[in-house]
Amino acid sequence: MAFLSTPPFASTAYPAKFSHHSLDSPVFTPRFSVLGLGFRSISHGVVVRNSNQAEPLVDSTQIADVPLLSCLEAIERLKTSQENQKSKQQYLAMYSSIFGGITTDKAAMVIPMDDHMVHRGHGVFDTAAIMDGYLYELDQHLDRFLRSASMAKINPPFDRESIRGILIQTVSASKCRKGSLRYWLSAGPGDFQLSPSGCQQSALYAIVIQDLSPFDQKGIKVVTSSVPIKTPQFATMKSVNYLPNVLSKMEAEENGSYAAIWLDDDGFIAEGPNMNVAFVTKEKELVMPHFDKILSGCTAKRVLALAEGLMREGKLQGIRVGNLSVEEGKKADEMMLIGSGVLVRPVLQWDEHVIGDGKEGPVTLSLLNLILDDMKSGPPTVRVPVPY
Ligand SMILES: Cc1ncc(COP(=O)(O)O)c(C=O)c1O
Image 1 (cartoon, helix red, strand yellow):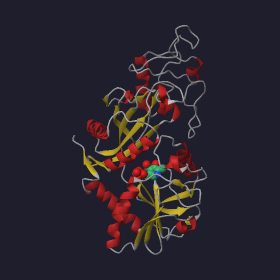
Image 2 (cartoon, rainbow, N blue to C red):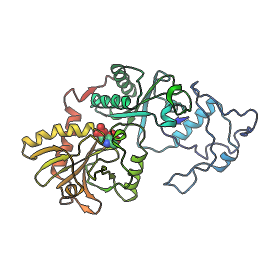
Image 3 (cartoon, helix red, strand yellow):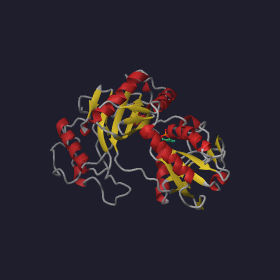
């Protein structure tokens, strides 16, 4: 079973010897079903360590005598492990086309192990922020979601309007007013082959994540990524293959930074692991790399539109989407990260180079305020009300 988060069992919550059935016992069957969905059991052969923790997460006695659990026992253990999980985020509701409904029970927020998205990465995803009970830029994200699905040769199980309706109903059922909606289209469950030909039906999943933490506008540091950038075919599609993005983010964190910036094959500035990047030159021109080799950011495009207002106010002299060298970027007056997660975040240092005067730039902060205002009181084209 693949969980949307896969917490290990809490080692102290259960007796070491829960079951008398060992792995080679005749009563052990490697396949069992949770919620009748044909999920597979997982046997752990190794002690799992989290890179941030020195202590093993799984009690070795659990590995020596792995218990065979009934469906209810497995769910009970899952619930306990979820209760022991410390997270600022709350998952309030999940939709799955597999069970054809919405659940608010976290233990049921699972996807089948034999889903092609789980074992082959054959899935795409997207998000939309939830602000004051409105979905921000839902339609823009939905367009990109369906474009990504088409690039990944996934034929959605429903048409666009139905998907849109399901997503809005999922947020409504969650009662969440601030956080994010994340959703996936997958080739679906079927078997463990490389080809999706055995996947009977593509699947749609969605989850509502409450996040009440305030937006942070403090400037951050970035580094240049040493993890290779995805080729344009894969960078322009929002597939679930985010391993390069994860490694890039980890590289940044290992270097005391917030994000690592990718350069494209010609050495031009590309994007961050889950955000776009933009600059304000000494001539007060807002410059952003084009979207032909990177993800077409919904927030970045909205920033480009809202920046027109700063032109009228004389705070900007121009707006340009084009190639930008690292040298140009590092000598810019302002640098910022842009995305649905970070919104608009000032960058104060890139590698060893201080950007501008080393303080949060005025244009960056104005753009952040414009996006925040847009989320709270923008036009209906960017704010979809959720009927609670
Ligand atoms: C690789 C990548 N680039 C850019 C973005 C920013 O896109 P958006 O503003 O639509 O969130 C994201 C976030 O989804 C991303 O994953």
